[in-house]
Image (cartoon, rainbow, N blue to C red; front, side, top):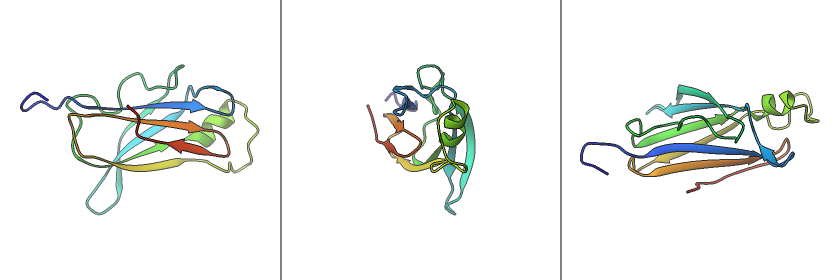
Length: 124
């Protein structure tokens, strides 16, 4: 990290394991968790044909230590792609709270998802 310059990024990659392909068109909300524990949405993005957002969720210069929440809107995604889902969907939204401690690091949060299960992890 260059002195005074934050160089890290936050990205995600969403894979639709039910259909064996990237999850294109999936809405993701990014929120900062305040001292009171409440999320404050700062950004909404949609995944592209590769299951990624066109730009990082947090780009260089936007990264700050703190607590964050990603909300993946998977129920709407599976309904839009015609998956056989219940109404209401078994998994509708996936909120994931995590912390950024090093604003110079790259944080990747991949999601593997089906209408019935999901896995997230810190990727590279």
